[in-house]
Structures are given as C-alpha cells and as structure tokens.
Image (tube, rainbow, N blue to C red):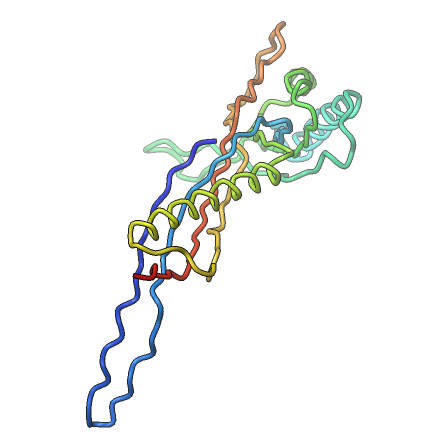
Length: 243
C-alpha cells in the first residue's frame, strides 16, 4: 500500500501575561498541540461495469425513424436479456427525436429545410461479470446498436479497501505525530480530533465512439487496477517530558 503525507507541527502560542490596567482580560491558557495529516492508498481490481448502449436511426419522418429505432433497441435489449442480464439491470437514460436540416447556400433560398429525422435511444446496462462484457457489447452491435457512449469499470469491494486505507493513513499520522513529540522532548496526550476529507472515487470511464463494424473476435476488455486514496487529519495534545 503506497501513500504520501503532510505533517504539521502546531504549538499554540504561550499565554501572554495579563496586561495591567485598562480592564484587559487574561488570555486562556491553551496547551500546545501536534497536528498531522496523512494519505493512504488501496488498490482494487474492477469486477463490475456500467455501459451505455445507444441506437441511433434516421428516416424521412419522425414516425419512421422512431419505429426503426424501437425495433432495433428492442432487439438489443432482448439479446442482453438472453445473455443473462436481468431487466432490473437495464434502464433507459435518454430518448431524443430531432430534425435533420439542410442549410441554405449563399445566393439561394435562405430558409433551412428539414430533410429527415433522427431518433436516439440510450440504455444503461449494469454488468456484474466482466468476463461477459465483451460478448455483450458484440451482441448489442450485431443487433443494431451503433453508439457505445461510455464504459465505467468499478470494484464491488471498494468500501473494504477504503477502510483499509483509512487504517494505514491513521497509523502513519500517529507515527509522524509521535516522532514530532519526541523531537520536541515530549509525548502525545489525548487524541483531540480525527477527521477525513471526503474522497470521491468515480468508476474509471472508457470513452467509446460509435461502432458500426462487426468483428469475428470478441471485444477485449482489460480491467486493470484502480487506486482508492484517502486523507486523514489528526490532532493530539502535546505533553512535555518532565525535566
């Protein structure tokens, strides 16, 4: 597990002597503190994926384009279901109908003309087994899908890995604090604060362009590894050793 860290030694200023006269109030006696922060990392191997599969069609009328699109997307969904994807793992995330226009040329009629209509339908597919992802993509393309908008890989054990990274980060923060305390001829007192900065670890995206060609070989998908990074900050009271 690899990590980097930032260490801050923070001693509160010694209390000033109360000023005489003028009604000045003495400052509170605040004990010195040691503050450290550390970063922890854990590596995980993605075992799940989310893929966005789209069907785009074009025809002279919106109704024709919509009908063609419906047939193709239904065939794609039926194929995914036949390959073991449950209906709860497939959801429509986008449906658009828009005209295709031709724009006027200089010196001619300046009114844009509608020459056809485009329809796009995109579904989000949750894949629980990465070893079947290539087959799913190939099957979808064969049934009429022509836009794989993105592919996101993620690990199902991210929570466990993140907590392991927290343990490493806290241990590093404490070790640094103890070293600082010894260097300052003292030792750590009570733990006063322990916090973490929210860490967003999005799935790793793989951009895909529209695919129209069929291949006899299954589309290869390499999961690789992902790194989960956490940051912690800890604050202890500092106790000076007796002289």
